[in-house]
Image (tube, rainbow, N blue to C red):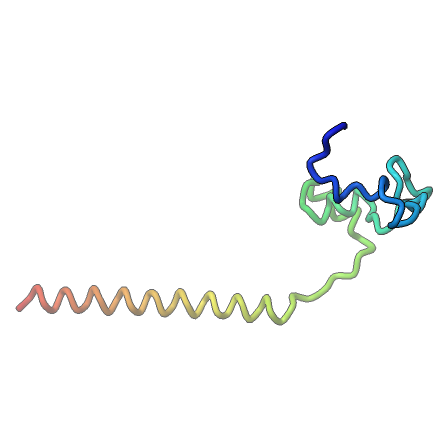
Length: 101
């Protein structure tokens, strides 16, 4: 590439930045992958497996109870729906009263 868009980013061409470590050079690949979950467990947690296979794969996973935040969010949702129903009923009742006058 004779005319790069960002010549200031071409650090390999600038000797003032020092040499590029071998593990940061293009084409380098580590000998051992790190932080990679087993693909079958990953697929099971995403729900992309059949339910029977999912249960078999996740059998050794600890079952965690729902988080307190999840329970709080559910309660807030129920309260919001109840408030909405109350407002709708109040509006409908008010319209019926006005219509009877």
